[in-house]
Length: 604
Image (cartoon, rainbow, N blue to C red; front, side, top):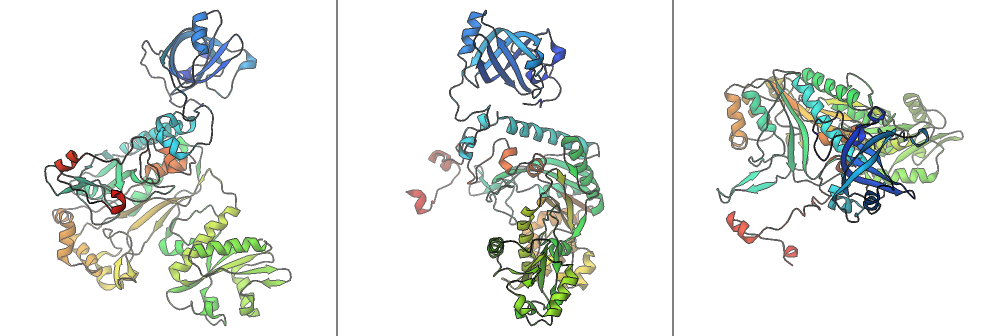
């Protein structure tokens, strides 16, 4: 185990004068007191060696047979028992030095040993990496947290939080805590509700984000706000999303433009990457890609730029084509998309069958492709193509013998997303550098979209963003052509956050909601306190809220967000260690004026 705690803590008492991972060759001859957990114990026929583990690392203890009482106690210790020892630091002989340990050049000859807590047999080992079910790990999370990797993840998370605070405070940000008990929001995911005892029949909600509070802080005259904020959303778990609660770096700034926020965030991510990890940023400043462009080229607004593939638009090639499936998708709002794999034209039939299966999972009716082989073009759609069309395709896409090109056709967004899914699928063919961080900004999101189900214009992203062009754009442009000052920051295909320059002008807000079919009265009913605040003097402002859990996940090379959270829930939103959620007594329910009406299956 490597040293993880940094500089020594000054506190010394009867349990401890030093820390295991901070002893080294310079400590030789010192009399020390140590406390920790028995990591491993080895009886070498006359000598007992104990690997003692504390927060900083591991130190080897030696119990000699002359100390009969000590030797007897040491011989019967179990792994993970908590002990305190006194002893003298000695240098190890050269052949016994352990370079994998920070304290590997020394050992402590024990003169006194006390057992503070005997450990029973563990549900799973701590010292050895053994495959253990997630259910067992979460039930005994306090044991799981002793394991080296996850222990260091939590320490790293603490250091990231501290580094973020220092960075922002040096740039005049003010840390302000916002309420946890607040009102329910009609937007976003499901709220977690908290019944009020003093106001029967009424409920607080846990905040999905401090969004409205941080904007009101800008109205209150605080120029730069931040907090590492707990957020609560009743939504399903994913590998990169914890159910129930998560933490985000919540930020807001007054009197800024989009570029100002980008500069702050890019500088912070660069600082954290260079000082806290071995990773490197692929491109700085971060590339900015407009929403329309990112969908056209990558098929997703969360692209992993490390994958060396780009989608091509070949719609114009098929406007006069005899291949009706493609020709029918050249009308406005539709597209034909292509993805070229260089040198993969000779893959087996199984390769193409698996690719087609994945395309169907993504919503495609199939997967058209053409292989450019030595004997000529091959594939399911070649018979529908003319020689001039095939030649034009080769020229436009730079195709060579041995290449294969895949196609998707349909409504523009659907074709983009299917081909984007295939781009990610084929990304497994490439060796991606895990130490490369390919950040990018996705900008220029459309302000509105057409809701096919309701047959109306609707907000596409965030209704409180400032439209580009402000009131003039709302009054003179086709709503579907209006862009917003909205942006996402993405790293290696993972969205870290969405943000926006806010709409702080009531008249523009009323007009934007009017386009989406809301009356002024409805806006006042739902967001009246925000409108009222803006009527009393609101500065231009904007913000963002990168997910802390996801950031730590990326920097620590973890694939599952539960590996960077101290006490996470499982995928069913249960805390197996604390048995939450749990039933409560009838007395508690009566106190809150609540009567249960459970589904029939829950009553049985």
